[in-house]
Image 1 (cartoon, helix red, strand yellow):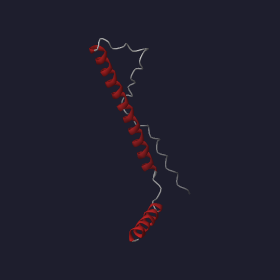
Image 2: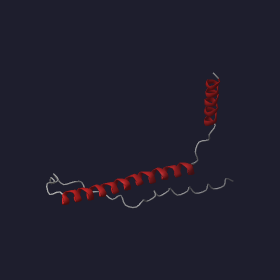
Image 3: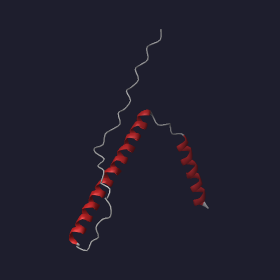
Image 4: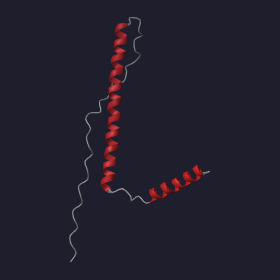
Amino acid sequence: MKSITLLIATSLLALSAQAKLPPPSDDAKAKAAEAAAKAAHGAKVEGYKLCLSQDKAAAHYRKTNKNAAKPSGTPAACANPGPFVAAASAPAPAPAAPKK
């Protein structure tokens, strides 16, 4: 009984703390977007490396096994994603002219 009460109290406390968080600033949003872009590029690079290693393993298999079947059709080439390029950030807005 005490554990259920403690669980409910902790849940309510967590919800109230979460509700008081301020919205993220523009800088935080930009950093989050850049982190997401870096993660997506990292996934592309990992996929490219995996494709290269699979091609290498398949070539070795065909080379060492004389009874290996020839690949049908042309296999898709591995596409190199290239180096990560950060998105150009928008220029900061010019400061407003003072009002007179």
